[in-house]
Amino acid sequence: MIGRHIKNVSAPMAGMALAGIFACSVALASTGGGTDPGGPGGTTLSANHTEQSQRPAASDDREDEREEREDDAPPVLPSDCEPAEAAEIEYSNGRIPDEDLCPLPQEDESLRADAAAAFYKLNAAYHEEFGEEMCVRSSYRSYDRQEELYESMPAGMAAAPGNSNHGLGLAADLCGGVEEEDTPEFEWLEDNAGEYGWIHPDWAYSNPYEPWHWEFDVGQN
Image 1 (cartoon, rainbow, N blue to C red):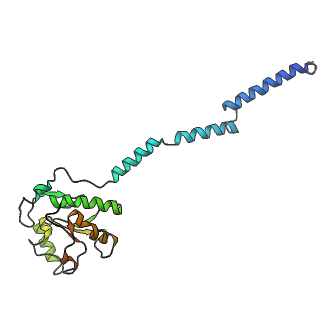
Image 2 (image 1 turned 180 degrees about the vertical axis):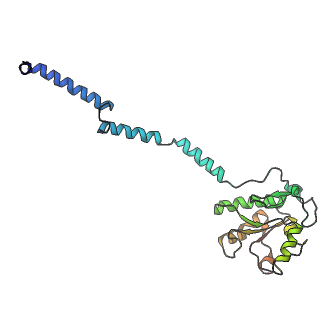
Image 3 (image 1 turned 90 degrees about the horizontal axis):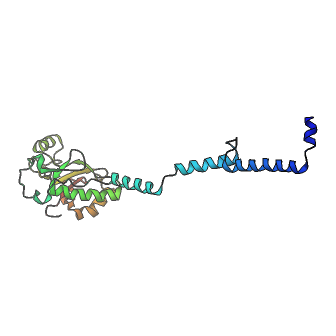
């Protein structure tokens, strides 16, 4: 009975039934609503959606780059350092109080405020050239520190206590390549440090030779 009923269905009715089934299949495929999420339609939609959701906005990229540049920028002179008044403060060599010294970007190093202000500018230019801050091995030296070095270092390698420009807060011994002659760092300083008030004194080329020793040239800005 059942088979006979199907057999007797008219051709127009069968055609309409097949057309309805086909239309339903097309609708499901176009919306990704098929039962197979791994099928061509569902896979393409999912991949596109994931890619768009993970792609950062252009404005976010620019903000990240700006923050990275700010984080990488060298420090600026502390606001409580007063270069204009530095030369008027008179202390004996190696007796400058901490409050009258200006800290350098390098930890535990300091100079007289005018020398420090010039050093910060030199440090920024050095950073722009080499992508890193200057290396400082020694800057201001108290009288006691000068005594220690004078007694422990070979003759001629340290000034007698009370006679060192380190004790005036006007000298710095550098490292990071500057301590060796003919390095890019040393040659760059020779060519550019004078613009920022820093010099490699004549005596430091031969008596004794100290490529690492640099001094603030008092009177320059």
